[in-house]
Image (tube, rainbow over all chains, first blue to last red; front, top):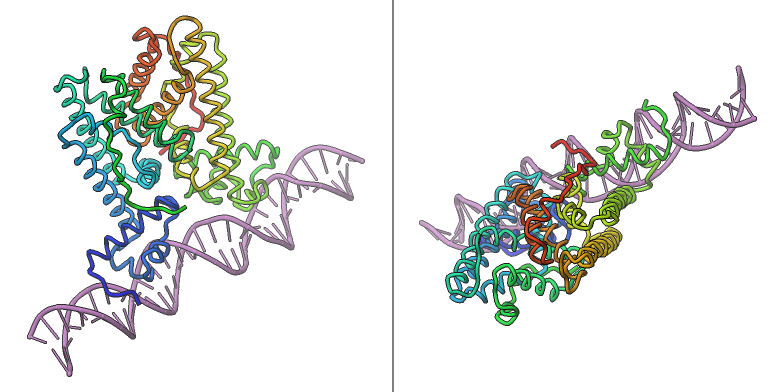
Length: 210
Length: 210
DNA sequence: AATTCGATTGGCCACGCGGACAAGAGCGGC
DNA sequence: GCCGCTCTTGTCCGCGTGGCCAATCGAATT
């Protein structure tokens, strides 16, 4: 028998396992039995923590959004805006994006997921626009509409994630190069300043072994 | 009983129904019984045309890729490259992109789909690079690396499709504006030339009623 | 008009799913 | 050391699924 665990801890365990499986198998294919096996418990236990499968998946996506928002917050509040922008534009680790791409494909059919994703994206764009404003304020670049520039860069990053993570058409280095070059051109930054100032931290979270 | 049909015609009917349902419900949720009901036959008949569910879905994605490639081809061979670029960058109709977003999320788990998608993307990028080359040759713009520019614009378009179709964060007009502005800046085109030269044809194919 | 071939039907099967629940087992309060 | 709470187990159920197949029907050929 699995050792009795603190309920909050078990809950987190289940959510983490769910996200790992969603990244690996896709939202629609994850079964309660899979999650239970991943955690190492019987599938009946999952229902002790989440009344329905739908609630489990909703909680998992919420956790993913919250984690992403925390990372955004960390970047947005850095002292130096240009390194913050460089890291913002760097390709998010693989595991994250499999969850996001899956979420995009589910969003049109799942109003709550859709609402959660759009709220997060709006906040995220606002934070990115804030970074852009600080760059402009420091005299290092220009922007006639930081919000529009943020939306443009967000779309580019998401598209690059599709090309890199889902399709494997470009490697991580080219994805970063494209994002950096486009941002530098758009914001009138000195060419090459972004690649020189990035920190490349390890932001991996849910390890997936394919 | 459904009237006896020409086999090729019935096959196309089944594939079209499958694509409609994939766009509406997502790849993993489409059942053979759903497809049969959409066509108006019994589920046993589907197996008469496709041995397994997997083969059916593969055929459907192939058909989608082929249709998209034909549209690309049409645009790439237009006489005037700038209107061709404008239409290339215009937001692809809703129905198409629900299928693509779903395909992106499935590709990492489905080697054949992955291969088909990457081959199509490479051809598509090559065609877009050809359009860019013709613009440069006509003296209307500049590009130091048409392939890289094509990949950048493709990523931007895909990302804009996510923002618009899946998340509804931006409307079609803003998606087009962002794509046009970015392309004009990147290729050194006269500002506003793209929006003035677009043809906005109706490229809708698989009508979906949500 | 009879024949033939295959498109079409409808019922069948085993399987895995989400959900439900009674019984068991660990742990803190007394 | 006992009690009580709840975390955890194992089993059960009905349902929908993909796949299978024998029987039926319809149109073209002869």
